Image (cartoon, rainbow, N blue to C red; front, side, top):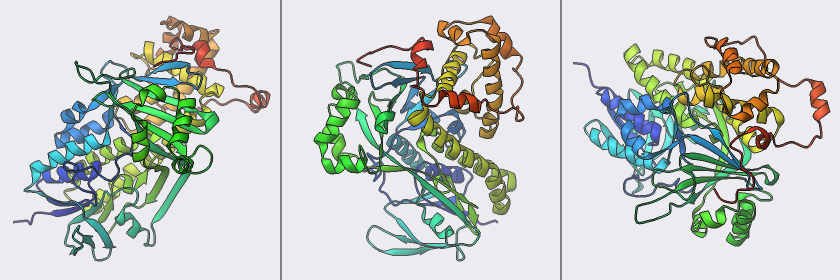
Length: 506
């Protein structure tokens, strides 16, 4: 009789929990190690320096497999609108849905997800042994071993596993051991910014908690002139998780506000984000608790040496503005589960196919996150960006039966991410043709109504998904030279029906 395989999983974040359960469901034994404490009994160390996950359908297969999808959605909040609030308090909305009413994203608080998964894993005590407050040291790739330092100071040498998975994030102990090996490439970039967690608390009433702001909405407060940004994502219980993006050091930075004190921080927020004056009555408490998470990207490879394999953020890390890191990680867990069946636990074949499929996707997701950061942080009012966002909003609202934007494909379909990106040239060609063939096309957009001429042009491209030979539209050098130094016009106010001027409250 074949001996039951035993796997070690280092790191009990979402990836470590989900991967451990998937392995246990196949009948394997798992030992799971986590340096933090049990999330069911105490706050974990990353509280107050996090931000919510944007939960997309890409993560659903993994959650279905481990039996937590319904529970996860129970602790999530639907998001079907994106609202941008400008410095003068003008605001506008963009569509944040797919082609059908059920095609929405969800906002999921990290600590709630940790609790759901920690509860679920307790159902597998016969297969999964969890050790919390366990620090991993001395990873030995050649010996397939590592040391575990327990909370009482005792150190235990662990070995003899069929495979050891490093799911312990960007500062992974396994990844750090890989960095000492020839043939391992590693690249990490910091962009000089970080984010910290604030909160708009729910409004308590006799009928229960209520949102202080509009429900089902992903908020953005861009402040390019201050080199800062703020976003807000709803929680199921009525509060809003706020991510405040600041420079690490310098003027209006995290370092500056931590050293200058709360009064200076409060003055800054009240002046430049006036909504915070009445939306954050607990600001002092938030200031005292807040910690900084640096925005960084990381690429490395290969992801497997010997009996060790990197999965999730230990193998790649993305700018949170893309909203894809967590979802991509869940896709990876589901893929490993499928490959185990396909290759009958042959980890040479599993590792090769896993890396070949996911490495290009992880790299592209990295680039996508940086692009989204640049758009919201710096380029929101550049004319091509405004026009593209205005047209995408219009098309997604009135022509969903025949057309989906690249953003919609990424968020509301689980098709290959690179295939979604390959639709970009098709989208650009369509937009260019609409502007060329329909006089004053943006005026048509401004009406907020269906137009048969638009539909007829879209119909020509219905079954075309990839035009790699068509270059994405860009302005000619003459256009660039002509517009150099030109004051940026607010086209959102001119063409978006949802635009509201000087609206003091949300």
